[in-house]
Amino acid sequence: MDSHPTYSSDVAFTPSVKAVQSRKGSRHAYERVEANGGWQTRITPDLAAFVEAQTSVFLGTASRDGQPYIQHRGGPAGFLKVLDDTTIGFADYSGNRQYITTGNLAENAKAYLFLIDYAHRRRIKIWGTARVVDDPELVGRLMPDGYKARGEQAILFSVSAWDMNCPQHIPQRFEAADVAAALAERDGRIAALEAEIAALREKTSASAV
Image (tube, rainbow, N blue to C red; front, side, top):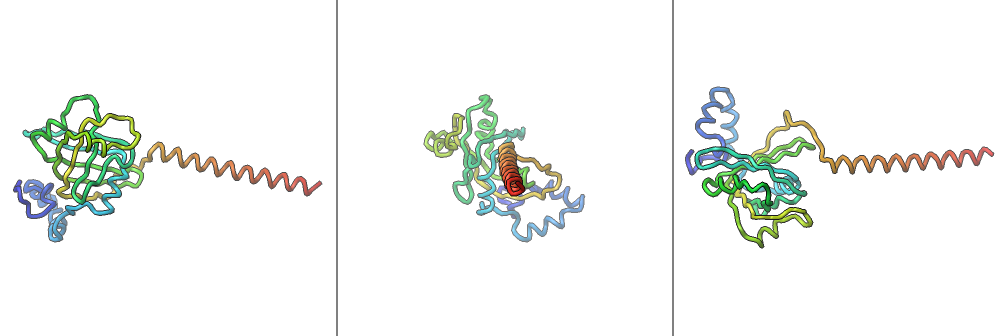
């Protein structure tokens, strides 16, 4: 692919992809996207809020010869940090020590972030480049407060373009903590109503004597 694409969406819509779109009838629709400049290339306030609310992310990389790999990373909301309008950073925790992502990025900086919010049925695709930074101070700043993990290195992701998918086919699921909080609130409300009913019954019984 041309290192200087005409449109930001060319990061995904390669000539091969566009040929398939033409053959299957969707090229005209995406030409309208291109006429408007392609996808957004800066992190907007809405995107920043979405990114920093996530507790899970998938990071895609590939080796020099194109072998793909997807790594999952998670943590409390805020573990993904928007550092400026083109950069997302997070602490890379010590894990199984395979270092596939680290090795891939050492020879191929192209990377991809996939974020999905099951509760609200939204997903964001972000293309860009990433690099590993061995800087204890930076890792410390990126580590979530009080999170029980060891930050081994930092990953800085530079955004080239991003797009939001429609919610079709995304199953709606909820975080266990959110469900537990909702159930606790419901149970508290039930207990309050039961106490109110008992008080009313006692009052009614007293007035009937």
